[in-house]
Image (cartoon, rainbow, N blue to C red; front, side, top):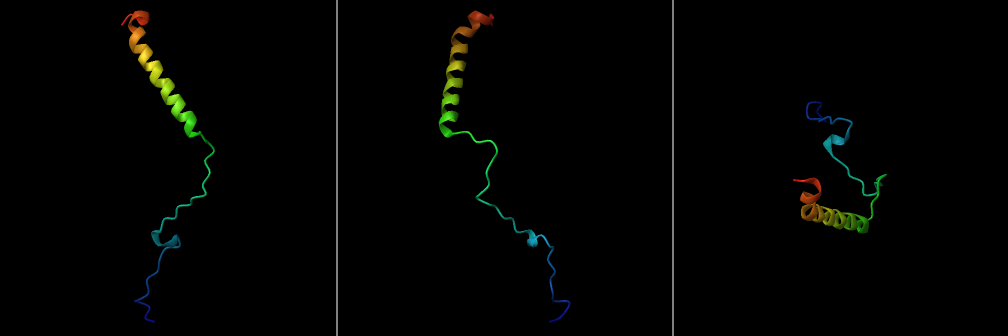
Length: 58
């Protein structure tokens, strides 16, 4: 094999990115809790729109 024809790749796998499906996050929130907290936030915002000007004087 000719020395000029050889291509040397860096030792980092030639730029190939690997993603692993078995990654576990330290922070885990159940989808049910996210939906509940989103609904609760919506209720709080609606209540603030209805009674907020009377309470805070906007």
